[in-house]
Length: 372
Ligand SMILES: C[S@@+](CC[C@H](N)C(=O)[O-])C[C@H]1O[C@@H](n2cnc3c(N)ncnc32)[C@H](O)[C@@H]1O
Image (spheres, protein in one colour):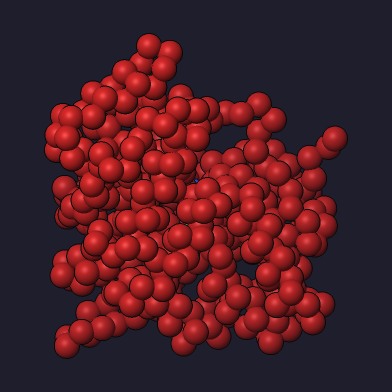
């Protein structure tokens, strides 16, 4: 069956953008990550159906400022932010999750009577179906807002857009705006990986003659105490969310190698000083028999990395935008504290038409997190 272009995907439907031959063998990825010098688990393991629900519960904890502050920015600045999305746009959200902020954006675009085709992208199939259904119900009265889903990873999106997704739009001049919310852009191990993905996305869209933008939420909080309170691993909803990744790993491996009682949790400031890392920590000597003759031993106190949550200063965000071939056109900040420090920012990136080729990015050294 032919792969449909974005403009051919029926409103209300979900299109599978994953490659026909699985490019990511999650089992192999788990084994490789655990066996590496700095052991880790793939962060994708956090996002099964249960993980989505648990993350949504954690978001509601009063100290988890990124969620509350970001929602506040979208509510307060909805008119200004949506002014960046012209009528006739394709709107693609990376990692839509429960789409709480999307609801604010789409209802504002509807009030403005703009014609928009919105696509939620997510790796989690069940969550994506629930999100698309929920938005369809919410926007039922709107004739101008269409809603569809794309099932797959960020990495699957790039070949889909390049290969077929925007080909039909080549001469359409239809603007494309990407939404990347929830500070997800900082979940990569290094900001240069986020820049590379954004560059690939921008390049994929360069086939169309329309403008390419990205609206990106970034946690820019540099207040270590505030961050420590938000990610305190004693918060039950946070520890339950993080521990669910072990259960997911067990399911993929087909063996119950991870026993939750053998592992504690630790939140540690990143070596770069630009965020926090979450780890499992062995409470005792642990032996993981992954079968196929792979046995990995962890001494007491050894760590397994779960996920990074970056807290990027403005300079790093500027680097990332520039390396991806965008310029930051506008930003909206949520400020807190006695001195009004910025805690959360929503930024509008506009593609620089002068940044032509991908070689531009490949030729550059990765961002040095310590110097940035
Ligand atoms: C931190 S949540 C953010 C959800 C939502 N955007 C928000 O702001 O509340 C991350 C979301 O991205 C999805 N996700 C994580 N990694 C992904 C990837 N590599 N490709 C596609 N979706 C991904 C997860 O399933 C989850 O729904």
